[in-house]
Amino acid sequence: MKKFFESLPIHDYTTKLSVSIVYAILASVAMNFFYQPGNIYSSGITGLAQILTTLSTRIVGFNIPVSVTLYALNIPLFFVAWKKIGKKFTIFTFLTVTLTSIFMQIVPQTVMSDDPIICAIFGGAVMGSGIGFALKNGLSSGGLDIFSITIRKKTGRSIGSISMYFNGLIIFVAGYLFGWQYMFYSALSIFVSGKVTDAVYTKQKKMQVMIITKNPDAVINGIQNKMRRGITIIHEAEGAYRHDKQTLLLTVVTRFELPSLEAAMKDADPSAFVSISDNVKILGRFYEEDL
Image (tube, rainbow, N blue to C red; front, side):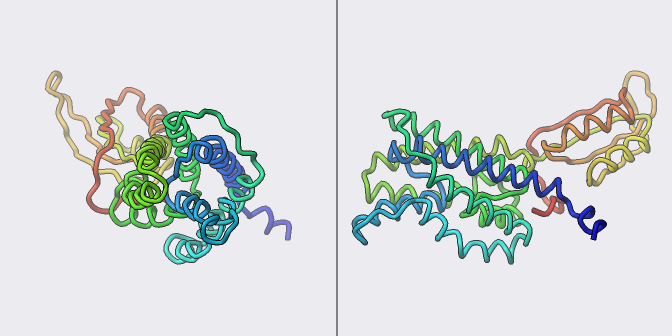
């Protein structure tokens, strides 16, 4: 029994739990400090939950909290995540959504500003930071993130840009029901949230690396010991100045892996020439960690 508990990835689980709590706090701050006071509608399922909450008074005669509608809308999406993405991913997404709903309920609504533009910008920035931080650590905030991740696996498009397509309908409905000015404020908030998500979620940004070295075996072993990446070898690359023979190595890594690459190069061949091209597009197979 002792060996069984020692084999469990306790550190990984506690890290994900911490990330879930951080996301729940950030999402609650964005909702109760900026979105709700400024009548700003968030992206994805959270925005749909806000719309249903606003309509609940007209339809059923009393206000249903955003936390309740958000949780209810996410329940069918858990089944999609279980089948399409992964069981561990779904379990932690369930935990994240549950914590988010609880925090949204207990964090008091506070008016930070009466300016809807300020609410849109800062609400979007806080929410985008939370979403990007969660995705970077292998978690999802639930909702349309599940569809976005599924589509990104097939198309290679970024999470933030995929979400924007889904969110067009949300902001149109918000504008139609509650005033067109709120559509524009909500669109601004969603745009900021998407950009901040892309900035934080660096695992989706791919970088082409060209290495010119006299110690190719050491470099290849150093890189592949620290990350799972294929490397193309071009022998007898010739320098134009000294006409010495070196080896050219080509690989593609994510921005998240860049510190590991730099550490591997420092250990294997500090004098190697390394050129990095940012944000390249990949056609073909590229290994990505399971969520």
